[in-house]
Every structure is written in C-alpha cells, then in structure tokens.
Image (cartoon, rainbow over all chains, first blue to last red; front, side, top):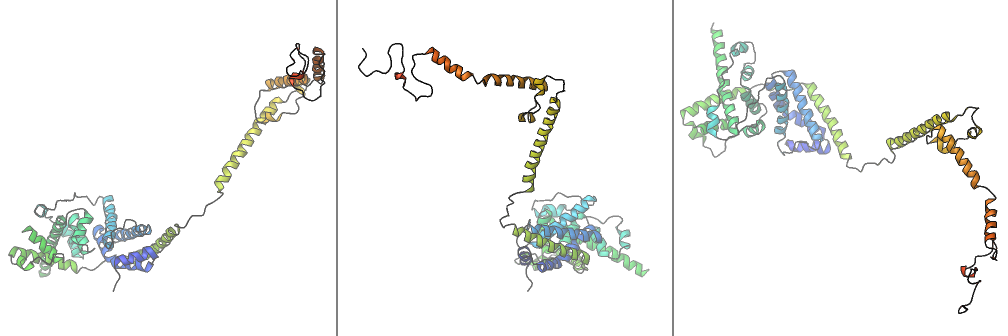
Length: 201
Length: 210
C-alpha cells in the first residue's frame, strides 16, 4: 500500500526523508507538468515552470511547511503554486487576461450566460499543420475553458478544488468544463470530416 | 433542466452524489445526447499520452530537496541556546579606534600649540623660561600671548605667597598686641575662660563674682 501524500510530506519535513519527497515528485509529475505544458504550450518553458514550482515547494516546506497548512491536499497546494507560476509567465507575455470570477452560486445564471466560444478563424489552417490534433483543439479553447479542462484532466482536481483554486463558483467551473468538451468535440469532428474528405479525394 | 446537465457532467467525472438517479435523467432525449457528446470528448481526453518533465529537471529538483533538507535540519538546530560571544570584534575595535583618534587629536592640537609657543631667542626672559610646557597645555588650546602673560602672573603671585618671613612676622605682631598673654605658641590648648579679658583676669571659681 502506497503511503498517502501527507505521510510523505511529514517524513520529508520532520526527518528529512529525501526518498519520500522523491516519491511525491514522481507521483504527481505528470499532473503538474501536463497542466503547465497545456497552459504555456512550450516544453522548455513548461520544464522551467515545473522546476520553479517544486523549488517553491521545497522552500515552503523547509520553513516547517510554510504555506502548506491544509492537511491531505498536497496536490491542490502544489497546483496552486504551479498555476501562479504559469499565470505569471502568461501575464508577462500578455497571453492571459484575468476574468472576474462569478461567486454567485445560481446554477441557471452562469449556465445560461456562458459564451459558447467558437474556434478561432485560423484554427483550421493551424490544425492541418499539427500532428497532435487534440492538443491543437485544446489550444483553441478560451483560456478559462482550457484551464478548467487541464486542471480536471491533467491535474485530476475535483471541480470543487478547481473552483477554489481559480476563485470561481463550482457552477462556473462546471459550465466552463461543459463548453470545453462541447467545443472540443465540435472541432475534432470538423477535422475528422476534413480527413475523410482528403482520403476520399 | 440546467441542474440535470450539471449532474450529467458530474456523473461523467465520478463526482455525482450516489443519491442522484441517473437512469431517470437519461430517459430525456436531450440529456441523453448531452451525455453522449460529453462522453465522447472525455474519452479522447482520457486517452491522451501523458507528458513528463525532462530528467534533468527532476534531478535538479531532487538535489534541491536534499539541500532543503539540510537547511531544515539547520533550522532545527537553531532551537539550541545560541553561544554568546563575549567579545565581538566590533565591541573591541570601536572603542580602541575612538581612543586612538582622541589621542591623535590631542597630540595634534598640542603640537600646534607647542609650535606656536616656541619663542624666539630675543624674547624677554620671563617668557623664555617656559621651556617646559605644562601638561594641561597638551589638551587645551591657549592663545600664545595670553598663555605667556598668565604664566608670568602666576609666578609672581606664587613668589609673594611663599615668603618665608610671613609666619614669624605674624607671630610677633600677635605678641605685641597682647603682651599680658602668658601662653606660648606651641603650648597645649586651653579653654577660652582661662584667657584674660578686660573685665576679669583669668580663671575664677563659681560664685566668686565679687
């Protein structure tokens, strides 16, 4: 049976067990790196941000846990650090614009008003040049939809954790996820039709 | 209706409460289509290849974690009572330098004063006798002219006060003014009643006024 994250954190902080920290990094590396890579779309930058994230984690834990005070939510804490690193990077390159979060928990309001983002005009041209169709489709999503999708699929956070992390209501997070899936399906279907047409010709 | 769509999404991701009846939701055709569309997209996402960071980055993080552990242990050792440093270098150097600066300043001022007090050979003998500089002049600046005058006046007053004939003269004057006084200088101390006055002469017994 694998020890829980909290147990490994305690071993590292209290007795300096480096193997425990190594296990933590290995256990969550795909979640953290997948989210970062999906956000910045550059492997080198994602590697840098991944390293920055864990250096901040080490620094915080070295101060007797630092800001990690929530027991049993190590991954959510690491993802918050990773998200801050990613948004700092994107904001510096003006590739991220903060959207005021909706704190109202009225299911009908946000669910109805959420815009159904259409793919960008140059999406088809860009799509034909990419090998990984799904990756390009994800890139074509709006920032908010893409972030929720990455946090749910790559980081494996719950919608409640995503809402807490991004500062919105759970209905907002669910609405963004729903439209992300709908738009993805639409874009992929378009590409499949295109592929079938090319094969037929 | 909107809550039903939300429940379908939650069900897809395994976050729907157990109490919710999904079968009744899927009886609705619109909700069934919604479920199928979302499931298809999710299926593709679930089967994406996972991405991993480079090994160099992982090695660097593990090395940093080891360093962070050392730092952590250092922090723990800080709980021990720190060793008090009795004499720090700063505490010794600052007073020593201050004292040295004060001495240098004093010597410098004395040198300036001394060079100004150097009197030419043609000066009067009263001033030329000051070949020995009083110690206090090392620390206090006195204008040369005032210094010479002050020392001359001190010498004169000292000579008048130390006249050896003053005490015998005073003794002789007392004897002359009171010739009936039988006491001698150097005798033992007597009470005042024994001394003669103009009205009674010497010591008298009680009750003998007449």
